Image (tube, rainbow, N blue to C red; front, top):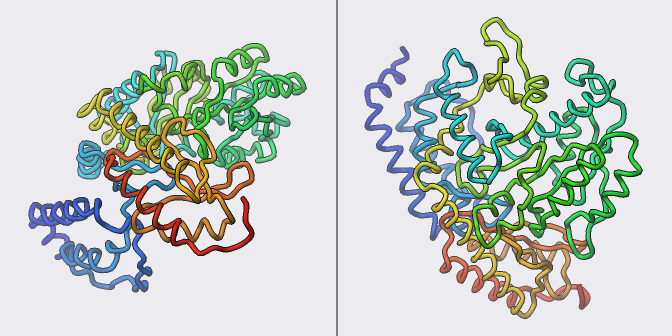
Length: 468
């Protein structure tokens, strides 16, 4: 054994303690650290021919790289839709690396059994029936991809072929209908060989991002054969929700596949105040939910559900002498694009086991309250304009005057050390988004954000013509 490896093995308990202390210090500083540090990236160095062991690597990381890390795990990182990591999820992730399981086969099955229990808990959390079966994947993009791959196979079943066996060319043209599909849907269609042009945008309700059911029915009536409907349970810009029951009724009437993208909107099911938004979620044929968003587990983690596990296994089955047969309960290796992956279910298992439904409902309710408070402040603040009602956990707003992309970028830059927001375009207007999904965010954090916004808007140089 290499001498540095041998030395690190002998000193592993002390080195893990040093790692724990460094991680704890980083986490302890999140509340006051710059949310996005203004720090250039270190100059790259060549691969060392001779290493100097873990302790030196820890020190080098702390000196060169750690100071530039954002406080994305902290309470005022409101860009994208980014959760933090609950204490239990952090412990689970640490143990995931320690155990280093690749639990994709029943030949070494404990990890598979743990994942199945975890998926069952998630199914209960979101109010789904036992008809839905699922597996964990890397994120919402992969969850949408798996769901649409199953939909592709369903379309083939309707036409008497199997795209998994015969290729997508045998399927012919495909129409995927959606009101405001997330960009990952087009990416998935490209990856699946269906093509980005298969995505047909259907008109939305006036002033909304929710699809117009009447317009969707017209599109279905005009379609040549079965289609795929991608419904939204929480759009990115304004957290708008399609009428899931109405879309399920259209699915039944026109013999379509209903995929619901509920990447973070599914968590509305946990809150008595917001559960009505996801009424009908269980009616999906396939369903996407991200976990490293509002469940607050580490990247990368999401779950996919479907009612047609038989079609899922037909798409993703992997034949090899060392793998078991499909059977009634296929090994995980037969259910997703990955043949190997870490036991990502463990972090989810830990946070669900530690805090249960009530603990995670509290996170959802506090985030929603924070969004409402910020939304009210934006609406009353001279110089800002709220662009949409705050339905759940996202505040979408712009400058009341001269709202150019450049001025909004300047506003975001002025705020970056105190709060991180991401740019967007809503109804053709440049805007900013604040997405609340971190378990650490408190009412005091919201007030700090409001104060920072007031100061940044006041100090923003005037530029451009008056008006939006």
